[in-house]
Amino acid sequence: MGGEAEPRPALSAAYVPADDDELLLFELGGKHRAQALSTAAALGVADRLRASGARGEPLESLAAALGCDPDDLQSLLRCLCGMGYLDEPATGRFALTTRGEALCSDRLGAFAAFQGSPSQWDAWSRLRVAMRDGGSHGTTPYQRAAGHGLYEHLAQSPDEAKAYDAAIDAFSRMEAAALVRGAELAGARRLVDVGGGRGALLRELLRQLPDAEGVLFDLSHVIARVDVAELADGGRARCESGDFFAAVPAGGDVYLLKHVLHNWDDERAAQLLRRCREAMSPGGRVLAIDALLWPDNRPDLARMMDLEMRVLCGSRERRKPEVRRLFHQAGLELAELRQLTPMSWLFVGRPVQA
Ligand SMILES: C[S@@+](CC[C@H](N)C(=O)[O-])C[C@H]1O[C@@H](n2cnc3c(N)ncnc32)[C@H](O)[C@@H]1O
Image 1 (tube, helix red, strand yellow):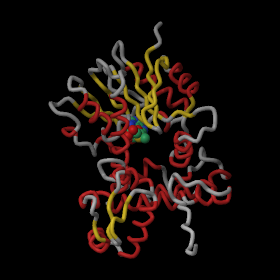
Image 2 (image 1 turned 60 degrees about the vertical axis):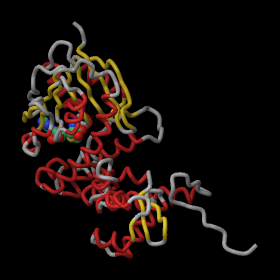
Image 3 (image 1 turned 90 degrees about the vertical axis):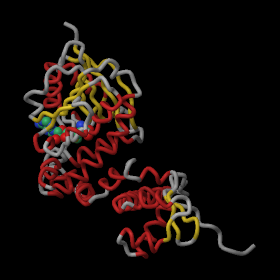
Image 4 (image 1 turned 120 degrees about the horizontal axis):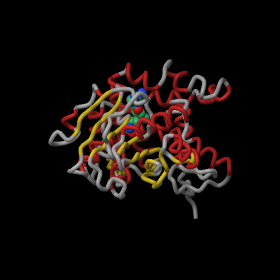
């Protein structure tokens, strides 16, 4: 029997490396896979191909529509075919697969695009310098790359802020869907989303809870970008701006803190929880959402988020006893715990009874 043996595929998640060298090469290829996916998302490849259905679209017209060099685009698309996100049903025609739907703008497309954007990518390349030179608690890798911190950068860069907002919105939709599947919001009448960004979570929750009203609370430059009429019908939502370490809106029965505590050290995080505890109405609770670190070294996304927080903000994720201690310092007990997504957990805090 002649002919060449088929090469073993080395890009898919099902790939089994022959030895440790091959495994290392595969892991380092994470750079290529992530950037290929992120670039395709930024170009809008998935949205465009979804519209052309199973037959797909010829490379030439796709390249013209996206403003790309056809040869470069073909190289990118073929990488995505190897990863299962696209298919080439006929030579030179590309189509979206079921897996590729996740890259569309109504799924995680904006998140994928932002993850590979220059400011995010550059920050990670400084991790090695920050490790030795004061650690992430000194000058963060993000500050080294951008010249200032993440939130200062967003406040000064409207385009980047728009991309960040869209990325967070995409992820928030997943978390909101998981949150409403549980019982923690039962009977909620007045939600306060503390550090709620542009309100993606609050909007989704108010859609699911027609009898509830909500307050979106954040810094003034963030609130200035919110269209309050879009948050809920019937005037059920309003916005307030201020510093959450000073005070948060009073009288809520649910205080949402989604991906906020992990930005702050223990002292600041406990202070913020205390503000929520002081402001809540009787029977109120805090619903905090963050990653959860397990004491062992399981290869989960929370461990990666921990490194991401060090790179971007000089902060970190927490373990369960650490969250319980924080809550306790604020007069709250950690009453329940539930996983929402591969990267986020719900921590329910209720006032400690005197
Ligand atoms: C990581 S973002 C989380 C946003 C949103 N909760 C989410 O999950 O999409 C942290 C939020 O805290 C807000 N923030 C930071 N410092 C604040 C302060 N002192 N007072 C009020 N909001 C603040 C930021 O503007 C930002 O929107």
